[in-house]
Length: 316
Image (cartoon, rainbow, N blue to C red; front, side, top):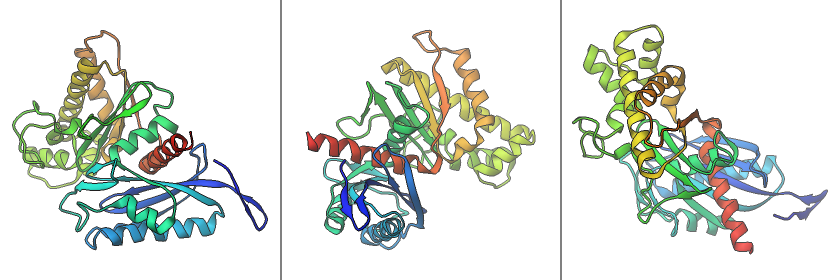
């Protein structure tokens, strides 16, 4: 990227990365090497429609550019749901969003900002971020998993993201074979029924009759609660089995795990590793298992990384 003259000399070129979640929207400004220069976080007006969500992004960007004088050259967006990365539209959104499915995200941003914009699924953006600046930087092959309200997945192969012909490559949360519990998607026995934050709370309530959330389950497990420990052990074993299935199909060598549930990593990791030790991958070689490093910046940084890649390709 180049620089543009400003009142006191050339203004640096910057990229914006955006993470539009059901609860909060995060906007970051990044330098060319994806160093985060500044960030803002706003509540997501998920019930007010697509344009309201874009206006929140634009307001955050204006605030950042007031604080960091620079020339914006591109925007990347990571959004929950099923997206069409080619057309920049949201295809399917959860019922927590109003007027989001079908919304043309990149067109709206390009019209308002006059710079190219690019859209990714949030889990794909998460893995792009961790591959660019985080826990799997430099890794040629990785599986990314996010354990939050649901379970998401993405694939990094030969140094690039693989999204598949339908944008569903790596969606490990909805592979079957994990029992018969109904899943939020309408299926049964998916990994998400054991390993998501919502499911940890549900499985604990089934065992104890007590209502809590995933954080409460983790706290109870940390205090030695046998039911909480059993729930986390079952989740870890299920995650390990999903990793083994993936490794058997595509010989993935590294797994990076993020999302809210990963905050319980000291409790979850031993269960995953124990299951992987008991039944190693078909290659016979250990799988590298790492927690995400970028925290709440991962999706936004990954979205900015996508914008950087696309802009470089356009410049050739």
